[in-house]
Image (cartoon, rainbow, N blue to C red; front, top):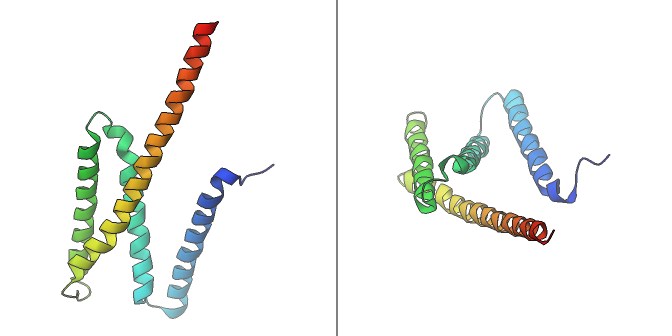
Amino acid sequence: MKIIYKHNFFSTVCVIYTLLVLGKLVLEYIVQGAWGNYQSNLLVMFVLSTLAVFVLSQYYRFQKYPLLAVIVVQYLVLIGGVMLFTWISGFFEPLHEDGYRDMFLSFSIPYAIGVIVYYASMFHEVRRVNQVLKQIKEEKTEE
C-alpha cells in the first residue's frame, strides 16, 4: 500500500523537513544549554508560518464577506501580531533601530506571495469543481 503519492510528495517532504529542523533545534538546546540567534530566528519563522497558515485556513468562515476585506483583515491581524511580538521581544533583547521595519518586510513579502498562491489555487480549484458540477448536470439532463 502506498502512503506517499505524487500529489502529497512535496507536502510530506515539507513536514519531515520541519520536524527534523525543530528536532535539531531542541537537540542543540539540550547539548549547548542555550538558544543561539539562528535557533531563535528559525523558531520565530516556524511560529509565524504556522500562524499565517492558520489565519489563511480560516477563510471559509468569512466567505460571506468580500474577499478583499477578508484578505486585508487577515493581514492586519497577522501584522499586528508580528509587531506585538517584536515589541514584547524588545523587553528581552535589544532591538535594532530598524527592527520593526525589518520584521514588517520579512513577514509582509513572503505573506503576500503566500496569499497570492493560496487564493489563486483556491480559485483554480473552485473553477475546476464548477466545471465538474456543470458536466454532471449536463449528463443528468441528457438522461
